Image 1 (spheres, one colour):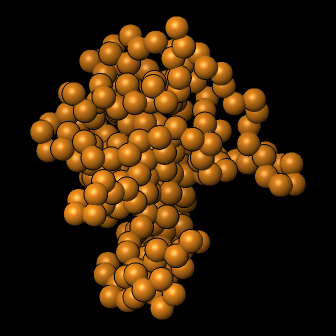
Image 2: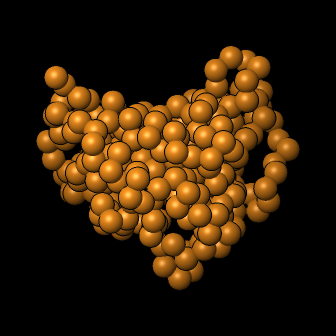
Amino acid sequence: MTTTHEQYVRAVADIVAASASADDAAKLASIKLVFGAGEAGLRGVTYYSKWQIGVEAPAAPFVEVCAFGEENTCQLAGTTIHELGHVVAGFEAGHGKQWKDACGRLGLRHCHAAGHQYRWADFTPSIRLAVNALPKPNDGAPVAILTNRFGRTVAFKPCPAGIGTKGGKSRGAGSGSRLRLFECACVPAIKARVARDTFSATCDCCQSPFHIVAR
């Protein structure tokens, strides 16, 4: 019987949601979780307020686990929970204490923004046992590490969700930025960086208000 990567990632998320608190589970219930190629160098990414079911419903996070960042099933499970931690903690948490606490509640300990070498010991016992009982994906694997247009190997980048929103050092001393990134609804989106949490502006092209994003 074939188990796809999409099914595996979804099953990990379901295990996490089933053992989460009512508040955390409610935040996870409306997200869109996918397994896709991903941006070069990323293992996973969370796009805040990028998925909506019905015009009246509030926009929910769109979460992608990246195929070309795949190393093994432990890493896939760890990355899934890493990104779910961003959903629960919210955009402003970045990779700070609130995000780490959220990951801990969801079953992933010793979290890092970048360079995390996932081990099964990083998972809480109940989550580790449940995830290890899942059928492993057997629908194939990426042929090779993703390369850029010049044929050079793309190095893994830190998770982009919330990096630098509070002047942090997740990519080394001085790497943080206090600027927030906003986008309109244009395709491709017009981007604006401002030094505040709100930005009351409307795009002249698409006539939509700019909204805060996590990239």
